[in-house]
Image 1 (tube, one colour):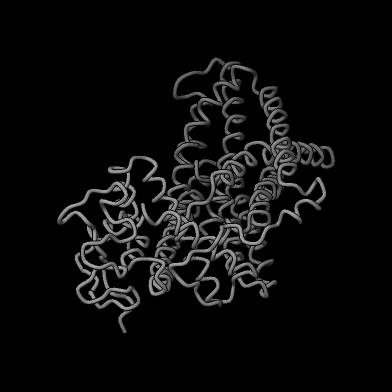
Image 2 (cartoon, one colour):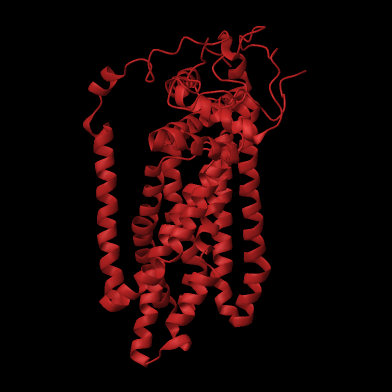
Length: 465
């Protein structure tokens, strides 16, 4: 792995060598705007078609009722997956794409393929009831999980820089499946409402109420749970070295097959009767979901440890202050830093600190991959880009992070800390008594005065031999 760039001389620009010449000679279909326009057009057309199909099957009134009920779990699921992604949050455009793909493209593929396959099986076997069972337990899991997995594949291939580990795979897969379940719930709830209208049912004994309880109350996590297994496979593959081609291919396939199997078990449980369904729910779905939740949270904690372990190299090189690795490796300290910046600098200050935290986390993950021999050929360029982004925000972010480290830890960094230019009788960063350091309070809008400057603090000294 390349040595760290020297500090304090920052890189000249975030983009590295100019690629305007390559862009000038690229074919029109290779341009980013063309690809984005094609993708948006595809999703929009898929959305219009699936809207027409669902409305045709449910009717206008049933569609509106289904829409109103199906949207209830969506904010909760999206918030849960976004919470998991707080350590190194991915761009919202990836998440919006994933949700739109699940709600529009994947749902359209599923409704057409499932209908065609079930009709073909019923015609071939002359057994409509058996065809419905086969379609639900065999065809639907294969078609639906493959259609949802396509979004994970697209992000994995075309947004590889944003797809670095298990949590990224879980979040992309979760958003995709949430969108898919949203559209499917509109169909099921709208159809149930139409059935109640014809039969004259209402209240808690209605088909709509029963469908709502099973799909929205009992199992809103079902589709996300299945597809997250695929996301985990791609997440582990993203952490593999480029030379480990077998692992990078087999792990996503294993995740997809496991997702199909769990989906088939869940759909098949409906044919076991009410007791059989509850037995599968209690014996398989709930424990498996609990294990998966534990795995994702454990992975998030491991990401925080990676931040604390990798960033000290940049402390020793002078790019960061001693307090930053601890503050950036704690979600509570990160939040305290943003709150501190918001209190004195408003929303722009809090936004700058949040961006600094995100870039520093990406830098830690990049260095971790490089240390393990898993970084790509653009490691040096990417590292310099991230360091540039940090350097441009250091004046606002550094005092806030040091304040957060101070209130989160009682242990002060000793004055003889190596590699920081701290001299006897001076202050941090080599600034003599009476000066300011990199944006210390009083220089960039933070409060000044005795006891107000958050000096360098950390929870412990991880670099002392």
